[in-house]
Amino acid sequence: MAKKVAVIGSGASGLAAIKCCLDEGLQPVCFEKGTDIGGLWNFKEEALPGFASVYRSTVINTSKEMMCYSDFPIPKEYPNYMHHSWVVKYFRLYADNFGLMKHIKFRHHVDHVKPREDFAQTGQWDFTYTDEEKGLTTTEVFDAVMVCIGHHVYPYYPRDSFDGIDDFQGKTVHSHDYKDHRGFENKRVVVIGIGNSGGDIAVELSRHAKQVYLSTRRGSWVVNRVSDRGLPVDVIQGRAQRAIFSWFPLSLKTKIAHDRLNKRFDHALYGLQPEHHFFSQHPMVNDDMPNRIITGALVIKPNIKRFTETGVVFDNDTVEDDIDAVVFATGYRFDFPFIDKSVMKVENNNVNLYKYVFPPKLDPPTLSIIGLVQPVGAIMPISELQSRWAARVFKGTAKLPSQDVMCDDIRQKAVAMSRRYYQSPRHTIQVDYAPYMDELAVQIGVRPDFKALLMSDPGLAMRCYFGPCTPYQYRLMGPGAWEGAKEAIQTQWDRITFPTKTRPVPVAKSGGIPGILKLVIILVLVLAILFKLF
Image: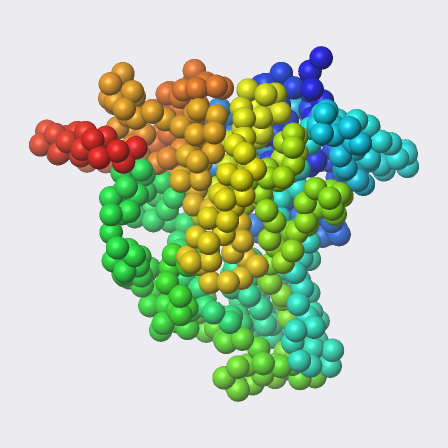
C-alpha cells in the first residue's frame, strides 16, 4: 500500500507538497485549519491568531517567472509582480490542474505530532488533530509528515523592550494586524522596523497620514522591483553573471552593488545607508520609498530610545510629539508547537535542520519541514524542490547521509551565516535562491548537467546558462522530468514581456547578436565548462 503522508498547511508550500507526494505514488492527506487554500497569500479582512496575514495592498517581491512551480508556468496574461489576489488565483489554477483539492481537509487543526513507540522500526507518527466543524479530536497513524506552515504565523512583538511604552497613550499595532490605511488618516504615525513590511506600510501610510516616521536601528539597502529597461530585477542575472561575479573579491562586489544602488538614490543622503554592506543583510524591496522621502511625507529616523505619554524620543535625542499610532513591523518568530519536543526545538529562531529540511537525529527520516527558509529570491520553487526531495526520501528512492555528515553540514552553514550576516533572529534561515536550488537538486539528481546539455542542445544550454535561472531548469532531466520544460524556457521571455505590451508601438528591428559576439559567448561557455564552473 502507498505510504500515508500528513501535510500540514495548504499554502504555497503545502500545495507543492501534496503534488509531489502524488507524483511519487504516496498518499497525501493535507490538514488546513482555515477554510481555503493560499496560506499567507489568502487575504482576510481581519488578522486571526495562528494564521499568516497580508495587507490589502500586498504585492509579491519576486516576478512570476522566478516564483512559479517548475512544471506549471504562470499564464502570460498575469502581471510580472502579482498582487496577492493574483497569487491565490494562480494557486487555484495549480490545485485544479493537478487535482489537489480533494486531498485537503479544511478546518482541521493539528494538535500533536509525535513518534510512535515503535518509531525506530516503522518511522510512523501518532498524528492528533481536531475537526473544528464537528468538534471531534482524532489520532491517526501516518507514515510521514510534511510541515508546511511557513514562518509568518507568530508575530515578534517586542513592546516590553521599549522604555515608557506602557505610558504611551496612542495606538500600538503589529504589522501582522495591519490591513490598510483606514483609521490612520490625518494621523502622525511611527513605523518601527525596516524590513519589507515596514517599508510597504510606511510608504502606504505616507499617502494618507499627516506625517509618517520610519524608525530603523540599522538602516537598509533598498532594491527596486523594476530594473534596467523596465525588466523585473530578478531575471537580469543568470548563472553566467553569478559565475563571473564569484571571481571578484568581496570588496569589489560590494563596491559594484553599492554604486548601482546609490545611482538610483544616495542611501546616505536619504538616511537609509546601513553600517553593514549589501551582502550582509536581507535587502528591502521597495519602489516608492525615495519618492515619499523626497516629498517629506516619510521621514527616516534612528531607533527609539523611549516613549513618552504622547510621543517618542529617538537615539539621537530628537523628539516627535503628538504621535497618534505606532506600527511594530518587527518581524516574526517561528515555532512548531504541535511537534513533540523530543523531535526538534526552536530557540530564538534557530532550529537544526539538514539543508533546512530534515531533523538530523531523526532515524528513519520521516518528517520534513518545507518552506522554512528566507531566500534572496522566490520561496515557491524552493518549497517545491524541497518537497520533491522529501517525497523521494519517504519513498526510499533517495537517501540521506549519516548523522555526522548532516550535523557537520548544519554547523558549516551556521558559521557561514554568522560570517556573512549581522547577528539577528532574522538571519537564521537565509539562502541564496540559485545556489540553494542547485544544492537541493543534487540530492535527487535534477540539477542541469550543462556539459551534457551543451553537447545535445547548445541553444537550450545557452538560454539556461546566460538567461534567468527559472524553475523549469530543474525539470529538464532526472526524476520528475517534464516534457514541457524546454518549451517553457524557450517562451519565458514572451511571458515576461506580454503583460506590458498593451499598446502597439513601432519598434526598431534589431540586427540580432553580431557574429563575433556569438563566438565570444560560445568561447566563454566552453571555458566555463573547462574550468568546472558548472
